[in-house]
Length: 313
Length: 279
Picture 1 (cartoon, each protein chain N blue to C red):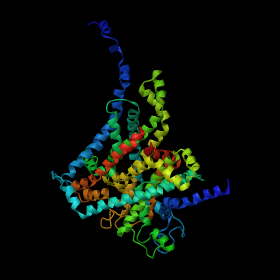
Picture 2: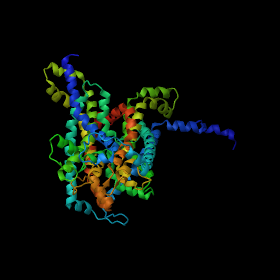
Picture 3: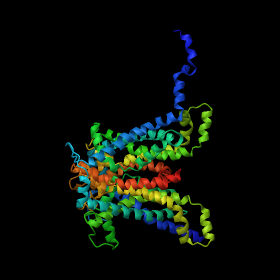
Picture 4: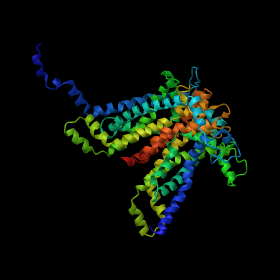
């Protein structure tokens, strides 16, 4: 066949391949899937697949280095019957509930203060945000030292101010004190996120609303109660939902500060799951422990999708 | 300024003092401890709030000479730089697709990214450890390079989607009318406008992976592979004897890279933090 007859088959076939690639890539339904492929592969292989593995482990008697068998919901039931797990379950709610309540109240107060006319505004904001950017595992070491049984600077200060009787509590070795200590560190570390995000919400409230309220004779307290709080509601919802997940599933603080002790009174799902799953090798049970987090995660995702993303679009 | 408003202003600062002490005291105390001589450090009658018997760099030199601290820091840097680079690139293209392109499955993928963004690392570390074993990366820092993007990519995608939406569509369309392809428009028009967003994504990805602890603790264990956080928390604590001076020196030095970034890019941290939740 003579080469000269080719043009008759139509112009598109003659376009150089570069141009064809360019044109194909310009189509949204080609470029879109192409652009999300790397992220999709990553999520499928290293999030969705491990999640399925976790589901499988949780209904098996998997043990490090041994073949496993299907045992149904035995792990979940056995956990629910064990005192250590019930203690963990309770700890998680106490830890999350108290931490979030404090972070919310202190966060709103701090945000209101930061929203005032301040000298050294940038410097103050920088200082407030600092606990949030420093590696938690490392800053918790500092708290560990501050709560040390012999050299606690907290106790030294308490005694010096006459608030404590010498030698003061053994923070990390006594039941309720240990929980107080881990909650304190969690508040310390999470407060900046609350304060700075709520501050962004405060800045976005239109000034006219306050002027109108003032014209109607509203004092500072009722301006806060009837203007600020209702306007902040969406931001507060997001912050609380986010923080619920990350406080509930916290690992670093408890692991470094108390290792779950004394006698499991500060264990959270993540630390207990690691202890059972890795330190004692019962992977099946360990996976079941972390899966107890899942219903909460589902709830938060549902709430976020329903209340939060709706506003974004 | 009237006397009354000045009074209020001073009062606001006074009210801020307890918050500032709460935020900063732990760092002050860590720094102090790392600079104290052992003699003073373990003197139960000494005032712990100041250095009275002269500062020393002994704990720092011991940390650098007698432990693998520099190796751990190098590991942290390598893991962080690689994971951040990969995640920002993957996140950028995904965010562009999600915020600009129309194709089948775009909405469900967006929801998927958002859900992944909310999955805490402590939910998946056990099965991921098995996956890491199966692909032969057990006790290797490469396991961290591979797994950190699982939380960095959703974060970067989510953050950048917010920034891409602020770039007017018309700007891009103009370029395309002038003959640019979509990829050229993204590269030459959209990305330069979204640079603040990219800086934010890089900073946060860097911070998140530098600070990551549970994966590093679970997937690596030998002294040549672990990161700074894991090295300081596990290798410097042997038995029941704690070397508090070195421990605090390690905690301080391990935070230095983040503090440097933080000092230079404070405003990006503030805006990125709020973008994640408010946008």
